[in-house]
Amino acid sequence: MTTRREPERTARVAVIGAGMAGARLAARVPDVTVIGEETHAPYNRVLLAEVLAGRYAPEVISLPSAEARRGVRVVRIDPADRLVHGDDGSVTRYERLVLATGSNPVLPPLRGLGATLPEGVHPFRTLDDCLALRDAVRPGVRAVVIGGGLLGVSAARALAERGAQVVLAQQGEHLMERQLDPEAATLLRHHLEALGVEVHTECRVRGLRVTDGRVRAVEMADHYALEADLTVLACGVRPRTGLAKAAGLEVARGIVVDDELRTSDPYIHAVGDCAEHRSVVYGLAGAALEQADVLAEVLAGRPARYRGTRALTRLTLRSPGSTGATDPGLDLAAFGEARPLPGDDVVRLADATRGAYRTVVVRGDRLAGGVLLGDLAAVGTLARTWQEDEPLPADMSLLHLLTDDGGF
Image (cartoon, rainbow, N blue to C red; front, side):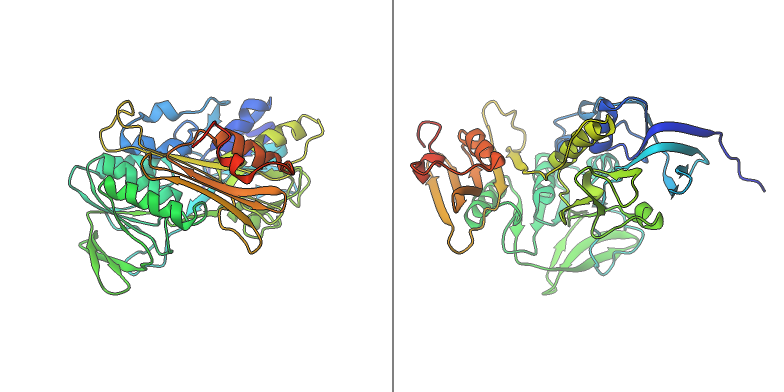
């Protein structure tokens, strides 16, 4: 039997991946062909928790972009002939190729978790993941979220808004360890608990108890079992590098790129979660968009270099059923390194009455990082100071960094 082969297509620039990086690039580069594995239009994955919570309809988070060939999975790249092969039999010839393949959710090595996920177990990475979870959740449903990073916290909050009984299990010492210091994480924990989320830290999940193909409980290392109708896996992500490896490109944790986002093949670039620049894989929407902007300039023949991203993390947690008018919730912002090193200066202000907390870390004459919860009036000034990476004025009081908005 002969497999049908579609006519060869030609693209000045072919982009594999219709996520945020691919869509951003497509909006800025003429004569581009975007090949996306998902069937949905490109969307803002930062807002997936809002869709899960029921605040936004899926179409609200769609991104403007060039037309994408949806539902096509690229199975092979042929760098020698500059060809991209799709699982639909399509062949695309390119002048330049951009890998924007993103990342996959990490599936932890848990007993009861195989190649096929049991019913009731959900990753939380794509819009399809989000919609499947949204359809499964009901008021009173027992949900266990494994992973206390930004994604896990967002999922737990959204599930609580939908009326689920939520337990959040985090292996580390505190929530959002990459972004928050212990004091800020404690305030975040208290806020989640006020929303009805039961939080467990410093606990290791051992496995899932599955009966008749459906998850019934999450078992901890001490054999304590958390009953679960739904289990959400929010254990981090891993760059999708399979196509690049098979094509012979240099890959470390991600696809290695230079300051022009160029891989080891001069005609292939990589951006977003799959790219590794100067030994850093960002996995952040802000970095993906910044890389796409730089690459658009490079592809246009203009001088541009990517020097890395200094990204700000923001999150708002609201009480279930609130509109934001009477309950503004908890606003959180974090940037840089919130954990001080020996010799660093730390300035911290807290106001329990207003539920506000601010801390910054100063390393030498520069701002190294900071965390703000509750009151973000100073976040604009702090973020600009950190992003510009300029020396702080010698006569500036460190306290002024936190009270630049006119007082705490």
